[in-house]
Image (cartoon, rainbow, N blue to C red; front, top):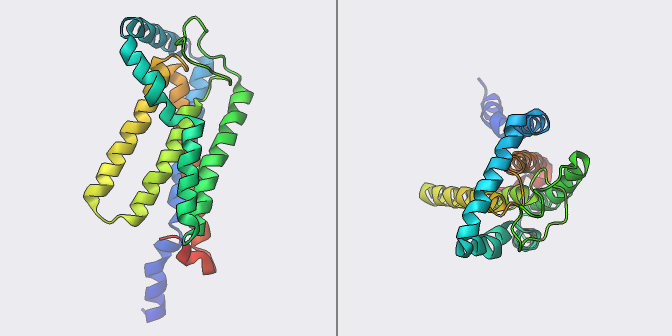
Length: 234
């Protein structure tokens, strides 16, 4: 085998590395489709949603301090304002030397918000009834999929992706991964606990958020592998 053929063979996986992100996006989209179908057709899942909501209400009524923690702090970590700040900070940090990564970040965060609103409008699922929801909540959009679950998946997912690009230590990568999963999971739990969403809304938000995050990263990797933009993404 000639030297040029060997180099081409060694570089082939790198040239097509973006494909695995698209495959992951397809898996996430399949999961979201399955969850949506079950939400629309399964009486058992809808009953589970209501059972969880009533159980959370019963617990919150007797544990006001815990409900206050959920309402005032944890759930706001997945709010639009917080994620806009996170996304903007990430973009500003990346614009100087990594424009493709900044573009990927913008697509993941801003595009994810628009996608979520569009899907909510199409599905048009009502939220838990006002008498069931936490009295301190103010909600404005439809219920499925959860915007907090989806936005936290895309926003904090991009932070995790950036950490993997620039951090070589396996221990630090593991720590970032565990912290991100815990944070995103806790935000989703807070939305269920406060009865802002049904349980299946959270699952749908995670699945669609994962699919959009993978698609955004895959698009960024594809851009990075094109000509002069190769050096803009590690």
